[in-house]
Image (cartoon, rainbow, N blue to C red; front, side, top):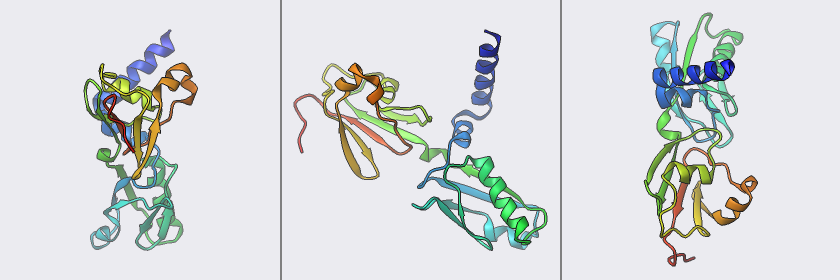
Length: 191
């Protein structure tokens, strides 16, 4: 019981100190994420060469001045910082650089709309699924078409039958940052 209380207290403290931004910093970096990269500990005229806001490309890479392409997908913000700092040192570009990487939290959201009780944006977490997103939006309204829920990801639409998920939760689909879940009104589904 004590370890659980300690964990809950630590989680609450992290949320109060950093809120959703803190959670975004712990999330794994993915292609399409926007990162704010800041450099310090180097001559002032060199800071602007690396300090910038960049979007991770489809290959999971950032293009960093002086060192070129750096793969950051699968890392969290602190791991990306260490990787970039290490490359700047190992390639003898700077002796004591300090890099700060911040994942912009506005790209760590999932949108839920349509026939749910409270349409809106949910903060992305790694365990978020279609059904937990709908639950986070207050659940279905009485008019929801539960068999034709749309999951929009990267411009592609996948129709999800949530009645099957209710019977077998193992088939629930994990959502990703930027996903949209649209619950249509019963009788209005068309393709």
